[in-house]
Length: 168
Image (tube, rainbow, N blue to C red; front, side, top):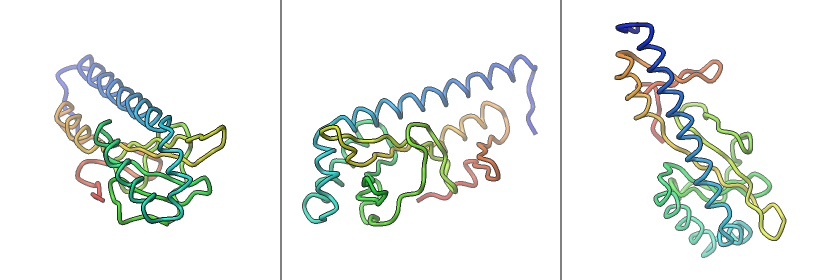
């Protein structure tokens, strides 16, 4: 149940929430785009399937670039859809990446993380994809405080709130 002093206040808070989500989406896109333009990332996407040193360098690069750009998640995906490395969970790789739209933000089942996947090109060829994510749990909690209630994000049948999010 939401309690507001006025309808005008409710509209203002909703507009503020929409602006914040838009700001986060733009930041996410700019960060992943910048990382994806790095030639070193493209080269490592080609070399990482071999494993070993190239994969370790890719994991280290993902970790540092995620930290530099304020991303909670950064994943490298091969051109054929296999996870090559996760900067946020380096021990997890080799699985099939979740199907996700390239070039548009999306929420993944079971987490309040806004994600964006963008292609990486090297010498005009598709080297793979980078998928970055920003955890929205704190933002949902802040919106809940602003709205004096609980706030949910909805993706069809699922709802995400700070209380319902599973932490990876």
